[in-house]
Length: 118
Image (cartoon, rainbow, N blue to C red; front, top):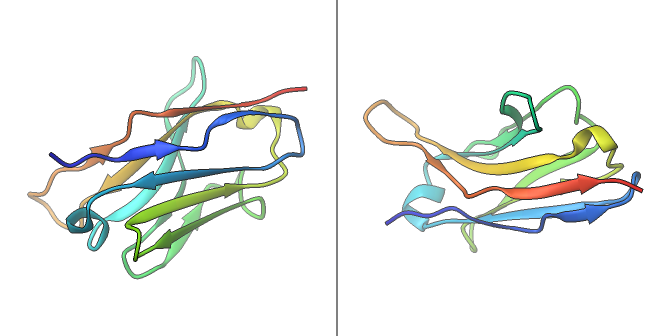
């Protein structure tokens, strides 16, 4: 059974940094676009950043210049480095595996809480 296993959330002060990790199987990691979404209380889940199997990236405007998504192909792991964190970044962050074609299913991690507060 395919899993996306997340780690790295926690409590950080404004201006601080955190790094999220998401590990999965080789069969998924090698062809799927991997992404991070977040959902704050009372809000819809939104895309934060994504990276294709070829390494192309895209970011939400609200995190451009502060967050960096990357992937380690040897470890089948995608990372989200979050810098200059703001209180409005507080949310549950979810790892996502987006399939490359119709007919394959997508996958979600269990979510990890990120809280930015002084």
